Length: 241
Image (cartoon, rainbow, N blue to C red; front, side, top):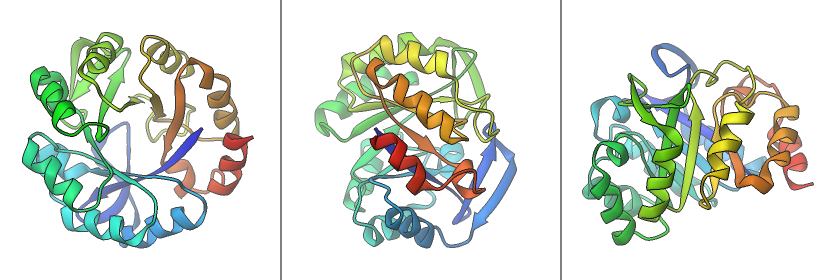
């Protein structure tokens, strides 16, 4: 099981949001590169980055920071937030990212996802952010009528490398991740699924281990690591046991 520390970028800083609200921000560091190095030193095998400004604007805002992080660590980096054209995908791959994460564009323009999966095989991950089983788009600003499981199945047919599934009602709330919805989504596809949103204790890591056989291959972890809920080293021990 792969545990992936998250670095959310806003105005060049490392921050966390509560329930995806851009007006409820906690700044954890003004030096995201050092944060990435810390997670790599503590055993992270991949770093998850979200350009929150980019998610709102629909284009990269913190590209230079992403490039600096990718250059500073020896583990793969995955980046999402505002990736809505092939030029942006290429720019991030050129900047050193191993994977790019498509969100809103994958749902609003399905042929785009299919095309980029063909153009950049094994580099495309889709982020499905949901509340009560319905997808949220545009930086979580809009909850739609689209069903998350049906969307996951469409993404699988298009050839995505993995799916990051976030329950935004749990994200940043330290309330535990949604085991039931995450398991249900993972069982509906063969594509690897990463849980995201709400992982807050070592017991949550143990719960993840219990549904690993259902296709949940890991988790993106944010606030719990920054607020000292547990150490990454301890979580990795459980994940690898």
